[in-house]
Amino acid sequence: MKIIKIFDNKTQTEYEIADAAARNGTAIADGAITPEKTSFGHILHKTSVNLYDSVGQTDDTISPHYYVNGVPSSTTQFDNSYHCTAKIEVEPSTAYWLGLVPAQGGYTKPWADASYGVFFYDEDGDYISGTTSNSFTTPAGAKYLRFNYAIYKGLTLFEVNRTCMLVKGSAMPEEYERYYDYFLDTQIEFLNSRVDRLTKPVYYHIDGDVLDVIYKYSAVKDMRVRLKRKGGNNLFDFYQFAFIDNTTEFVSSDYSGGTVAVTTTSDWHSPFVMAAKSGIDGDAVSSGHFTGGNHEYTNTGSGGTPTARCAELKFFADGREVADTEGYCERIEAVWTNYVQAYNTKKSDGTGREVLRECHRLLFDGVRFHTHVDLIPLEDVTVATWYGFQCTTLSPWRGTGHYIGGTNRALFDASTATDCGDKTATALVLQSGGHALEMRIDPTVDLGDRRFYTGTQGIFTRTYDKAYFSVIQNTDLSEDAVYTLEGSYRFYSE
Image (cartoon, rainbow, N blue to C red; front, side, top):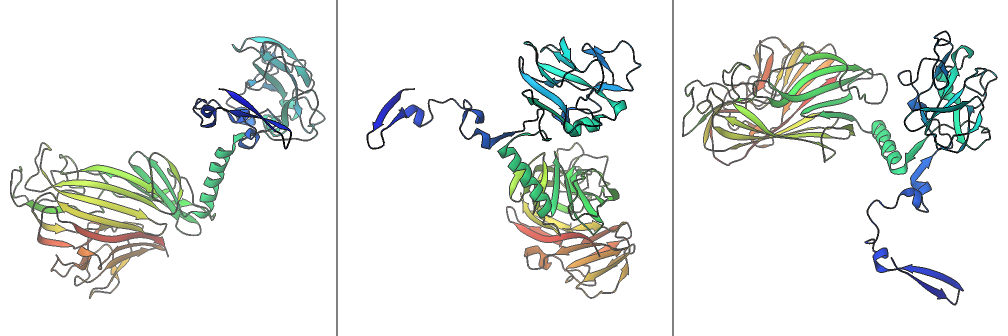
């Protein structure tokens, strides 16, 4: 890099100007300039005067022995009186002061009156020498030190971690300063995460294809909802609901905790009774079985080859794609695509032909799980039955139920078989002991108006612990056409 000098006659000042390569950055290798080498490095990188980091000193890292000449004493008689810290990195031939600020029990030396205090080691961990003075200069080859602390004098690890300082120089600090070492961008990221916890209603944790969502359920509990691939076809869906005790105003992050209320192996996004119009080559062409959802080849939920597959699954937090992470957000969304075989194209060896694509979007905003489904036939098909959305009627919601809309508006026992009386009802509400489940369909969006259903059971319950919408019945769907259904699930405390 060339430096050109110029002189400003007006200000009588000489300036140095770097050549173009230096000015445009091509002369500087990536990463060559660290914050410490800049005039603003002290702003980006903040460190404490105290070099004693208590995070590295725990019951698991310290040595529960009294040390003599850098190693545990040959006798254990003092092990209940003294322990020795884990190694602490230092610079060679450097003056330090080590001690407690302020003094504890009259002692600034953590080792109190012991005959052995501080020990110095080289980079291989070999002992060099030691001292019992607070103020010392490290040996020329020193890389680490460690020191005894007198438990029997009340100088426990807790007290040492709370008051110990290791500083450069020979003078005792006037007041205690905690250890810190961080870059400003890292600190900003941490502070942002704290703000998110205070202000955003949803906590999420993603581990592969498992999504845990936590939100405020009541003044004393949060709800954890787990969604994952499951069932006979390993499709993404609601899986587990749990309650987490939490009396604070902040949403819990205990993604593996809580008391499980119910685990549902059955499907919430509906399977199909569906037949291909041509090319019929399946192994059970007249079975009329369900495919997709939880219904594998045997139509029982397990034991057979898949009749559907989840080809893609993605997660978005506040519109940003995320994976294998956790955090707080306003909205968490799962987007996935399933491919489904027909009952007359499915085969026992799993090679059945896929005839329909399901495109799902499930968005949680802290209150409701909004669900959107697009059905796109890959060829002409006839759908004899498709429920769209369905749910469990098990505890904690197994009490009374009622329909919103329809002709049957009376309260009913959720464990019995009921229906809404016509196809105009838009929602089912189940209630028990202050817990409520609401399953809703949007009649203003395409299939939500029940245009492909002519019966009188727009919503119905069954004694085997399930409730269903009726959306499509005995209808031909055309290749590459798009059929859309929207609705929502809500799980809340009354």
